[in-house]
Length: 53
Image 1 (cartoon, helix red, strand yellow):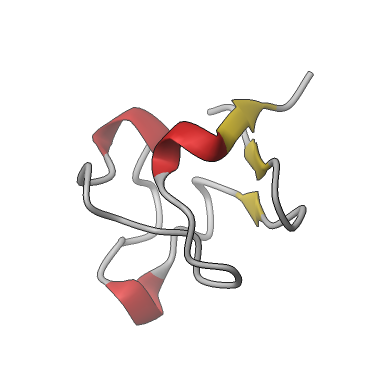
Image 2 (tube, rainbow, N blue to C red):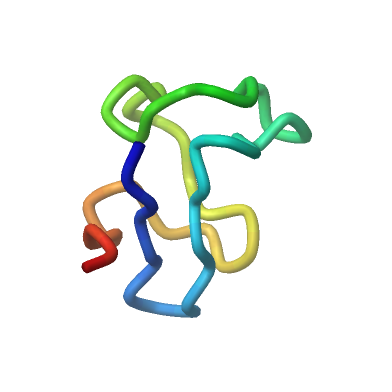
């Protein structure tokens, strides 16, 4: 699964790790994260993330 990077702060969402502290289990692809999820570091929405190349 691909990683996604926050344009604002550089946080990397890694599907292998997920974001368990905010209700996203390990193994959850970025596309499957709820639309209301926000970056755990800076609070921006999913629309501010881009796919890592």
